[in-house]
Image 1 (cartoon, rainbow, N blue to C red):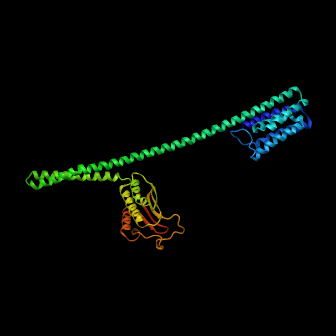
Image 2 (cartoon, one colour):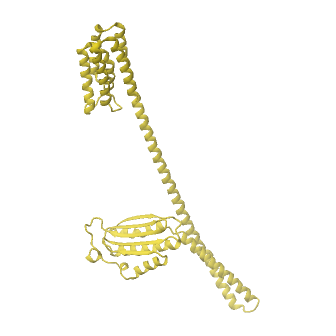
Image 3 (cartoon, helix red, strand yellow):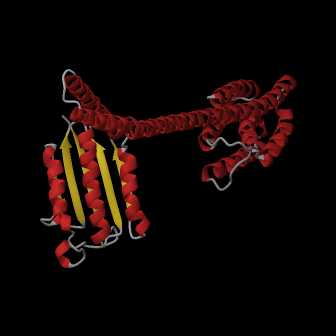
Length: 383
């Protein structure tokens, strides 16, 4: 926008000088040439760069460069039109067309016999003003461009920092969650190893005392004590199981299972788990059991190099997909072709029965296909 305002101002003052300096056809030629050259150069010189000058490899700027020289040459040939020099000088300064600028100086010198001293002085002052405005406009454009670049860089860095902060927060949450699971597991072990054993010993001692002391009321009181110890033992056993079950991490369990495939050196394993941490215990155990059956049989029987394991939680169901395949094979063959050896779990064996039993117990659906590799597809509804 700054260049437009500059050009309008210079063009207006140029027309004023032309109107005072010349008349008739020469005036019209000078005015038309000023307007035409100004408009063409604005269209042709469109790029803003951090360095001054003209990029002659650019066709538009090459034409503008040539046009400035031709315009100055025309003015030299018709010195009476030299009042149009400021307009051409503005664009010549932007493109650093020193040839045209030197020709402009010659044109102004040749103008002197055709005008009054004051108009001549005003023309020179207008040339300097055009040069000044051109430089100022160029600097303003560079500053504006640098400002926008800095703003964009700042926005990009802010977004990157926000993303890193979110990653750190998630990593911290994962670390806390893992620590909580580990602590629950430790507490469950401590209760089982210490309190559980002490209660078991107390139950045995109470049973021995009941066998020895048959007389009342000692026998009844010992029976009540044994009943209380039994209740306490059952409660502690239940609490220990709950703590142990809650301490099992589905992600960690699947990753630990897939180590069997990775360590063999024959498989590339892709694991994608996207579930809520508060998954029901029975579903968690079912998924771990299904994964264990599939991974074990893939390790024993599959000849395909790649394995996908996906456990995704949807709004109404959990989806489990375990799939071994060869991504580079063209026209993959089915199991009957000899490309794969059919594992036990895909026939009427115990593995398939275990998987189907786990899925049926949760009201889910099981699908097994043997085209393009073996795929186990399970959906479990979320109650």
